[in-house]
Image 1: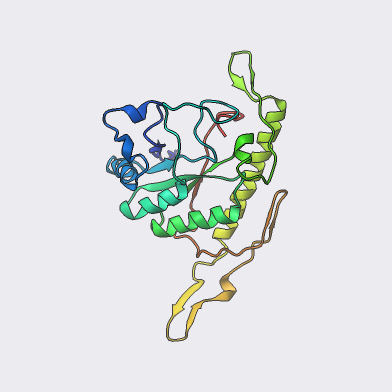
Image 2: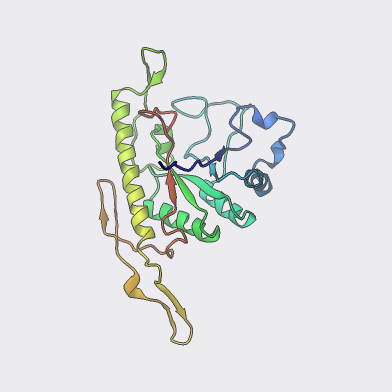
Amino acid sequence: MTRAPLYLAVARDGAGWHPAAWRDPAVNARELFTARHWAGLVAEAERGLLDFVTIEDALGLQTSRLDGPDDRTDEVRGRFDAVLLAAALAPLTTRIGLVPTATTTHTEPFHVAIGIASLDHVSLGRAGWRVQVSARAWEAAHFGRREIPALIPERDTAGRWEPDERARGLIADLFEEAADAVEVARRLWDSWEDDAEIRDVATGRFVDRDKFHYIDFAGSGFSVKGPSITPRPPQGQPVVTVLDHGGSPGPTSC
């Protein structure tokens, strides 16, 4: 009988997950948007021998509402781009995995794929990707490329908020699109063979063009020709993760 390995991680977002965490005396609120603050958090996780750290991200400001931004001034608002932040933290760490969140709904899978591949290179093989979708109309308005209707949740028999039938259909479509985005990323990471880079100064050959491959992906929402512009990641296939919702995700967990 074999046992599955246990991996321990910590999820990081600003000052912490509690809305008032930024007011804790141990937190220097003036440094929340500095590299030093984030470097300290990740270094602490690495010293604690955790396997990886995830970095939260979204396409809209944090909010206490389901349907749009709020007017609160007593909670942290604003965040860094998670992939760019992880790339900045990579040279400051040596062992811990870096798993930023990147949303698939309004972003091009080609850009996400090369971003994670680049992170894998600068971290020497410690990159991951936490996949996320956006089902919020007010986040779609930042881009203006597609219309997402406002989702109005309803209470179930236990009094919990759940998406209605229309919302469940939309969220299912977005997760199907996210699955396509992951497939594109995986194919792009494989579009350079391991020995595609020659780097032979004597012959003047930097790459073997025969070891680049088109991926020719065609899905319902996009098509991608390939190959990647970023060499194959050190891991080959960086780790891809998603939150385990334990059922159909609601509008607040997308």
